[in-house]
Amino acid sequence: MFRSLNVAKSNIKMQSILTFVSILTNTLTFFILSCFLAFALLSNYLLGFLESRAQLTVYFLDSASEQSILDLRKELLDMPQVTEVKYTSKEEAYKIFLNIFESQPLLTESADAAKLPASLDIWVKDINNMDIVSDFLKNKDGIEEIKYFKDALQTFKKWSTGIKYVGLILISIMLVQSFLTILIVTGVSIRDMSEEIKVTKLLGATNGYVQGPFFAQGFIISFISSLFSVVLFMSVVPFAEPFIRQSFSGVPIPTFSFLTLALLFGAQFVVNLFLSLSGTFVAVKKYLNF
Image 1 (cartoon, rainbow, N blue to C red):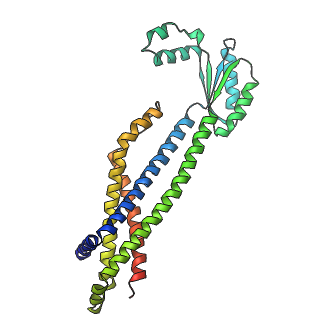
Image 2 (spheres, helix red, strand yellow):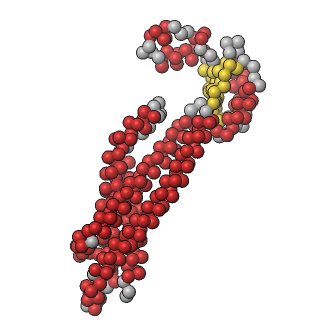
């Protein structure tokens, strides 16, 4: 094992330019992969958060009685498309208003419960069911306004899905490029060691003894590039995080923890190592004829 690592280090020094290109390619590949995974996780989290909010909000006229609103709530709950309906009275709306604007006394002093409408917050099983519920509500009396966020949710979903597909294509291309780079680096190493390999084979060396340095070389490249990609990713996070939090203010976006960082490095290293060892295996089978 130690011999394989020492020979691998010598090969890396001998092919310093090729090794640098391989490490750079793998680093960029897994950096982009990290960004893509972060985007996928963030978009799924944001979509789940947005869908967990009230997807339709119905505001009632002052003439609507509390009993009629509660009767409508019961009708909505009986609909198969609806999962939850929350009633907010004028008094509760006023309390919420005071809590939100407690730092602005001029605004709170000019408001009273009579000016705020009662409302129903409605959750549906699927955003495509919003139109059905909205059409049902349009035929009801005492409703002042219906607000729902179907277009915003669908647009967000469409954009996030599109970016995910583009990211998958880009990452697939870069993974193939990384694989081919490892293949070339290993092939050049085998060529440079061809005479030494012939001698060791004549002296009775096993296949594992001959092949070990090339797999060790793949291991070293994987470890270094995984480490660099995580460092690069974490150097970008402090600049991107404030922008994301500002863009989605009000959404409790989780922060990166040490455990998340460790899991990211571990996942990157496993995939990177598999890619490097696969490329090395193909190169060994192709160029070592014994």
